[in-house]
Image (cartoon, rainbow, N blue to C red):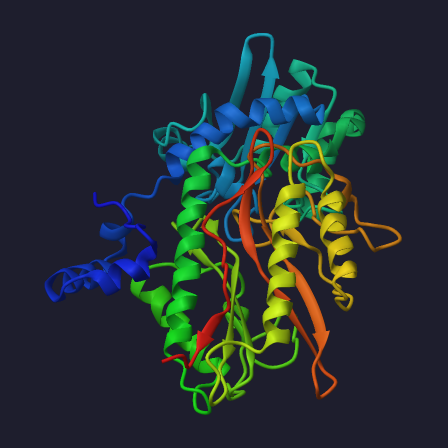
Length: 444
């Protein structure tokens, strides 16, 4: 299989190609399986279960984790445990004992062979037609004597909240007097999903680079006074289709192209991009249907006679960029998410920025707003619990360098230099080269 080409970004490579080479590359664009290669998720998932989940169980103080999967209305964690193809109800158990880590599945016999063929789990036990997989799992739980049984019911973590009310009632009925042993899996799911394997980080780098490169190319096609924010968004959607990638979040708001006042999380409108505008594009792509990026790139539209951005706009850009750098410097194992937010907000105050209500950053990986510490809360009387969580090696974040000012018409505009980073042994590092300079639209 051919591997993705990321030397100086995909755009630089495309521009550098001779006609025949460029034609060959464009052929690859419309053949995603050839371009990206075989989906690595099956092997990565297996590795995550066997290498990361045992430690997550220990850290969360869980004896056994019960996940119930079924057709049409499945648990959000199903893909992570191998239950995405469940038809009849299946019960997945994960636990540690004196002999090590174990994964046991009670599966309807009609699907058990296919599940066993995936070679994800230590044992797949067939459940005859007419019998209950959940009842079999509860029988095993009682026989083994587990005292803390984690189930997917949570008020704070949607990835740990897949158990429906009717499923809980059935489970509680089967558990009987042992129902008191049921605890939320929210801490376990947090411990497991918040850490990414090194090979996952490499995929996230590709997703980040692709999103950044596409935005640079989109800015190059703008005709001031004619092109709209929605036109730029359509261009980016076309690039996604060419490269066989999908949306990192809801398609209606990916990308958010905004050349006017702040709109927050929004959709691109038919506003015409004009000279003097500062353009924000918030954009992400999903690779292999699993891993997502979240990257922003900023541009300034030159007015007649200008060869660079006005001094005040350039200064605002430098302030925002400095916020990104100081936030990155604050990221290291053992610090709270709130601490990273505070480092940047202190700088924002010193630089005269208006208040920005959004957190400095958030976990990113399987979804744009993933499981992990929230990089926020430094200016909130009661920060959310996720802002008190500690950063750990292997966590990945999207985070902004902020500076907000009031424009001549009284509206507010925010530069939010959004990059992605991974926490290392001693600090953190950007996944791709961060944006250093404002992109100038209309420069000859």
